[in-house]
Image (cartoon, rainbow over all chains, first blue to last red; front, side, top):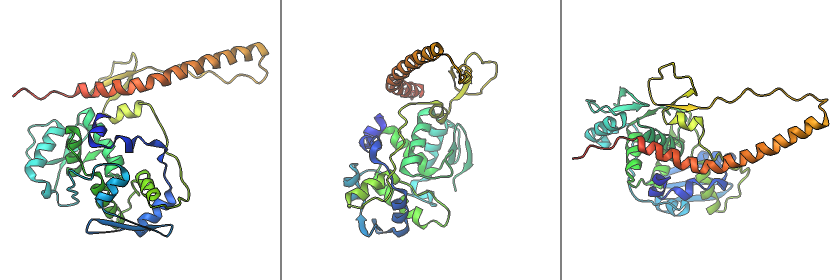
Length: 111
Length: 184
């Protein structure tokens, strides 16, 4: 709970009456596109267009902080940083290379 | 991973970068976010959502359509009339799945003969379920059962009231289990 509050996410993730409409979510994803950080889609003929700042206002959460979303190129995060994280989270300070961390053990290298 | 890190990791892959596969393995991105959240450093959730939605929409692989509940708030903001809204499932308690999700092995109370090879918690073993009452049960038996049901309802209510406190207690326990960094 404290971790959620520290991020400013507590209200968002504890608002259980929010609910979900799967058909609308599916339509949203079918029509979605993202260009230069702006998300655009159409649901029930309503145009939705938001960037991260506007999305933060809508969700009531901060749109600041770490935003380095990486997919395949993990080097963007820095090898030294990744090694430090793997050592810390896996509780294996002797690790020589960054690794994916399983529950309790490391099992493969991050390429 | 330490229990608290496992709990944070589980939250992240269910809510921040949702996925259907790879839920037991933290990659570089997961490790970064787990560490940031553990240390209380701000993560830009809206930016991650937009990037991850773009990935979900463009990946050639099958992918869950994430952020359903969060998108509801976006839809409502833009005045989208929702077709079929389903309320969230509310489970306001910490059960065995939560404890196991934090990396604890559960053993039955009194059965400590086997080495579990890790942290363990004891859980009480429920008594055997009584057989169904016969259709021709007498009135007095029915009254006894009714009284028992009333008592059970009272106990259930008391148990539910304790759940909120248990939440805080278990989270405090998980936090306390984290090894403290050595003094410089």
